[in-house]
Structure formats: C-alpha cells, structure tokens
Length: 96
Image (cartoon, rainbow, N blue to C red; front, top):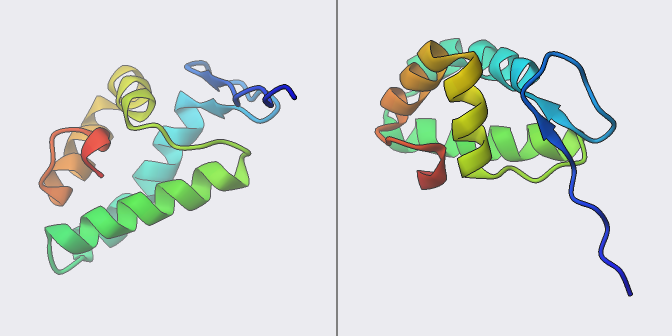
C-alpha cells in the first residue's frame, strides 16, 4: 500500500493542484489580522490562528506545518508574520 503524495507548498504566486502558495498564505493571514487585533488575549489569538490555518489548509488539500508556514511567511510577508506572532505571544508558527 503506497502513501498518497504530500501536497506541495510553493513560494511563488501561482497555484498548484493541492498546493499552498506563499502569496495565498500571506493574503489569508493579512485578512485575519483585523480579527486577531480585536481578540481579548494571546490565548484567543493562538486558538484563532491554529484553527483558522488548519481549516484554510484543509480546504486546499494540505496539512499545516509550522516550519513551512514560517518559511513561506518570512519570504513573502515578514511584516504580517511578525504582527500575527506578536499578537499570539509566540515566536514561530511551530508553537501553535
């Protein structure tokens, strides 16, 4: 029995079948910032990020991986990454 191939994760602006691009990920996170800013505390921000990213990746046939999210957001939208992580009180998406 062979395992299904893992979804691809790309840094470019294009979309691959079952893939997540850095541009799409950054757009998603940028859209989440207003709600994250209104969250009453870090725990709520962490929960919102964790569940939101999980659902967002699931819709694209992928599985969120904190180290990949860190890499993609560092390359494409460091400002958005920094603000989201600061609001959550963590230094990396691996901590969600």
